[in-house]
Length: 224
Image (cartoon, rainbow, N blue to C red; front, side, top):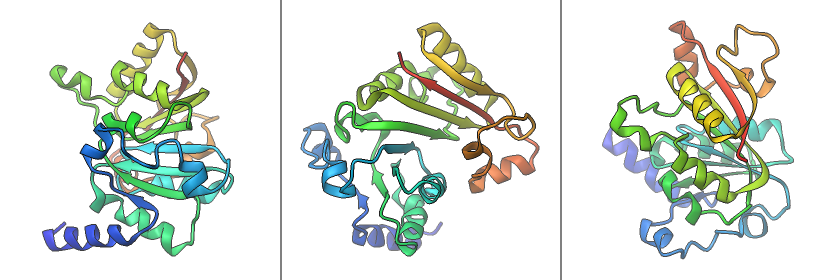
């Protein structure tokens, strides 16, 4: 994507009332006004809130929101020019149950209050295979601890990835920490019984992986 295109998308994001772009300083100093106020101030209902972390183009966020108008969905990514597409689609379809936030995921506890979130989707994250980058994996224990803070007691986490390594790493970590694994599948498109919301929604990159013959894995779990 050219720099002119990126700038155009950044400017357009600024005009969307469902896109939030807090500064790092605002979050670090705990001055983000929306924290703890998402239901009252933005969505204006008491429906469950579902996050997609590392949402990319926002395809999963938007498609999940289309399927369930009784839930609110928020896509989070540091690359605003990417999720511009999802934000634009939500606007064009007059979707009132969708929002996007441009921020780093490690600051998530400054974006949401304790017990404010009902579900989290992690879709096709960077597996960070190099050993030194373990702490950057979105299912590393440090991140799981952050999720536990903002999730309700029975909150669900979904991991969908083309990385068998990431799937196995997370599965082992969850077992070791004693968390509840509700569902695990190493190849959702070739095994019967896969959840509909896992197989009926495909991102652009997912379609590319499937065309290459890659298996798509899925985990659903709770943090104890």
